Amino acid sequence: MTRGVYAEDMFGKKKTRDGYDEEKDLREGRFVAAEQTNLPLNDFMTRLLAQELPLLDSRERTEVYRLLRQYSASGGKVITNQDELPAGIREILDL
Image 1 (cartoon, rainbow, N blue to C red):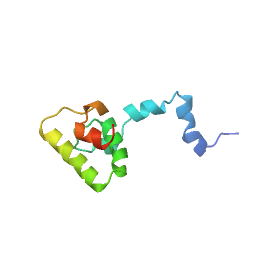
Image 2 (image 1 turned 120 degrees about the vertical axis):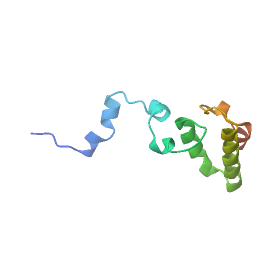
Image 3 (image 1 turned 135 degrees about the horizontal axis):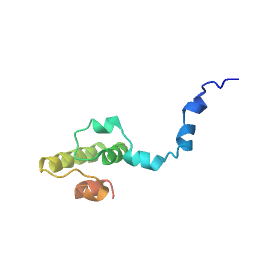
Image 4 (image 1 turned 30 degrees about the vertical axis):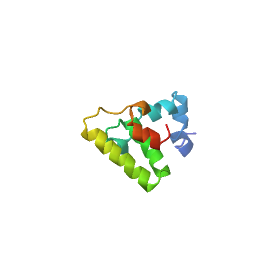
């Protein structure tokens, strides 16, 4: 009897069997959408900020965008963790 290809064999099981680490994938995984942005944030911080923006009202989102543009225009380095975010953004996000 030959083994057929079933969805359960294709999704999830191999990752678990191969020592898949979901937390590591979230931090170090490749996300094409995050790579296509023009932000002074690394991919991980881009994804984190993208998760928080829908929770903000339009005024707060506009302010976050303004602060990121200002930071980028001032030649700031790429932000790789929450502590490196401009103070105004940390305040808006309550970090």
